[in-house]
Length: 285
Ligand SMILES: NC(=O)c1ccc[n+]([C@@H]2O[C@H](COP(=O)([O-])OP(=O)(O)OC[C@H]3O[C@@H](n4cnc5c(N)ncnc54)[C@H](OP(=O)(O)O)[C@@H]3O)[C@@H](O)[C@H]2O)c1
Image (cartoon, rainbow, N blue to C red; front, side, top):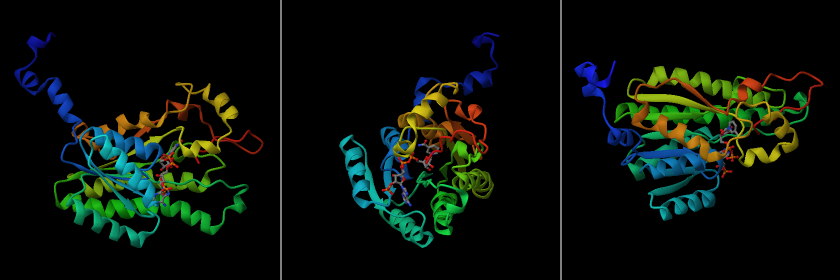
């Protein structure tokens, strides 16, 4: 059926290119990005800034946050810095208070900060390491989503994006605590979508291997060999996460919640778990 034969309501509802641009516009929105100083967090923060959002950059290091905020301001965006260790539950209340005092609102929260420390054998995983992995990757994101999400729900609504990992669904022997934490992030995303909907949408991005600080720990020769089996045959570049994040942050995704969006060049389909004696896997540490 040609477009002229389409029902009137369909024609009326079909809007043009301007509307498409509007869908991805974040003008007037405040976006808080944890781990926004480098890697995937920086790419998402920059993408949001270029879509018009005011950015709050959060990481442990105040200097690094300020450097990124200054660079975004130099690119024409509004941006501010907030130092905070997201694994420290009690500091998150103060962080959220500070952001709401200074900015009055948060429309987009990206729980991106994450760590995956290396270890040898399983018994080398200390309680301290295990607790830190859970605190930064799972506990902190939960608390921030709770604090910001309830304010969003009571205000103008918003979008929360949790950054998971394909390790959550393709866990390997070198990332067991991390994979468990990220699997928790996936489950938490769905539960939070129920808890905070309909005014707040909660989704996750599940990245595969990306070339960031994390990838410096990889054996690149081995990675190149494995990457040949990926549908895209390569690792991702940080800026390749920005489109997925902008989709989930903006009105382009008003009917998307509780979704785990994989951005991995298809790599998860080449990642079976490894048993004893198999070559080491590339964990996203
Ligand atoms: N790169 C990959 O291949 C890959 C794959 C799957 C999933 N991921 C996930 O994607 C997210 C970003 O990874 P990335 O590769 O971009 O990592 P990255 O380059 O190492 O950047 C990590 C960011 O998190 C911040 N951060 C670390 N610990 C923090 C803490 N306790 N509190 C606050 N901020 C903290 C870091 O800044 P400071 O050091 O200043 O705190 C930095 O800004 C993580 O959740 C990671 O698990 C990455």
